[in-house]
Length: 324
Image (cartoon, rainbow, N blue to C red; front, side):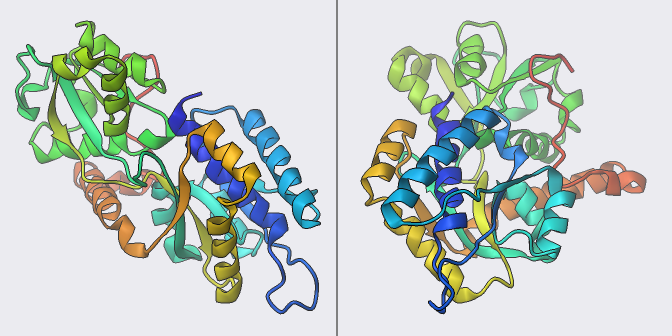
């Protein structure tokens, strides 16, 4: 399990406890039922059963400390259609999902405030396009005909979209026509090291992942050269059903921010290398929103007749371990 996927598990664990720990705002009917959910797209690089088991243990620990019932638990939803229906039926109060899914659904009943996990003192990710320092690839326009490996974990959920926009902006056309071979991996070592050893021409990973690799092996930093980087992007978050009472939203936010002081959560943060949950305003999504807007505009320009087929949660053609 990567440190980045573990960080997202921690976000789920904290959100899961909201489903059973929130008190009724009016204080007259006992604990309020807050229905928490998360998208299964968040499991792209983690084991779902492991995540559920971890949530159950953490929820019971916090429940025992606070005298609350933790037998409920979150629900799991597949795709934007299922999420939209659950929100419409008010079966969901708070949900963890990718930013791509949120931006597709914000007009269907979802809104901030956003709770985002912080890793390495930041809650955003930057994606970097790397080649060997001695590579003939000096700029984005030199990429055609070369091989590429791309990160495909949760923190990298926007990498293929960013690469697609990057190729289009530099006049190269669709990314799946640019490279001689494209593969993907959820492990940063399997993305970066093949380029380091000359087995692949280029790779796209997170700046955090690249820097960690450089700390473990300084030669990685010396031998790889950055030729493009994204703006800071938000891969995913927890948000709320728009018509959930503001008072209850604030109670949930306070519970999240206050949980970091609990010994059980400190243990969990240390185990999963997560620093904190941070409340962020809507403006945090500005660069992510711009990226998705550009991507969908290019989809429309490429094939206007079938533009509706480019679902918001689609990613351009990368399949882990397979050539394109």
